[in-house]
Amino acid sequence: MKKLKITLVMALVAICGCFQANAGSPFRFGIKAGLNVDKVSFNKDKWEDTFNEGNRCGFTAGLTTEFTVPVIGIGMDLSVMYTRMNSEVPYISENGLVETDKASKNFIEIPLNLKYKLALPAISRIVIPYVYTGPNLALKLGGKKDGYLSTKTAQWGWNLGLGVELIKHLQIGAGYTFGINNIVKFTDKTIGLPSVLPKPEDNVKVKNNYWTVSAAWMF
Image (cartoon, rainbow, N blue to C red; front, side, top):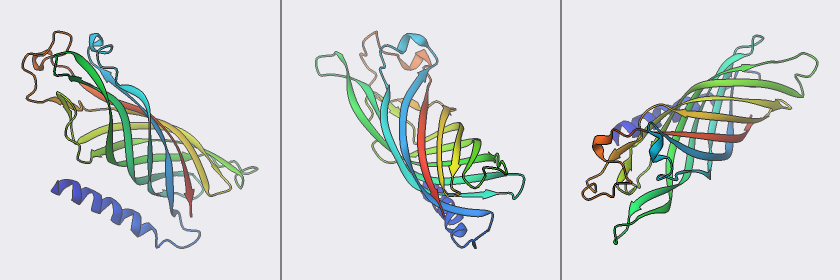
């Protein structure tokens, strides 16, 4: 928890520092919001049908800042977002059957992207296409009860996406986050599991992948 607080403070300081940027500066800040569609992937296909987790819509909202090198269009953006991801989580009922329960997990999401803007002289005042890529850290907030599998607090991903900037202020983007680390660990509720569920010795690894569509207003 201490490391989480330090990470959040550092990210917020970086964004707030950009609030002091003067007009015309390569630094800009803004507000951002969007929707996400979550889908987990397994290292063993036989669990895909048992764990019907994914393809459910959540949301994200927060602050963003960007730095763009003048003329060449290369820069970076950093955001601190409150994100909710919705999914279906398997659990063992009192009668021993495998059932699923709808679950929502809340995160502080911190994406840091390398961004390239293609500013075409004839239309750059109206529309500027861009592409971006970079690491993404999602830190789970509370909610440790996830069934007999517990999801980890720190979930790493890699972003890849594209978008357009309209009238120098409105940025609309769509991207995909590829999960990097294994996000699950077995709880102590593994005794007497039905054969259709993975056991600790099965070495099951799960990664969190999701689409995000967002809009940001840059000041």
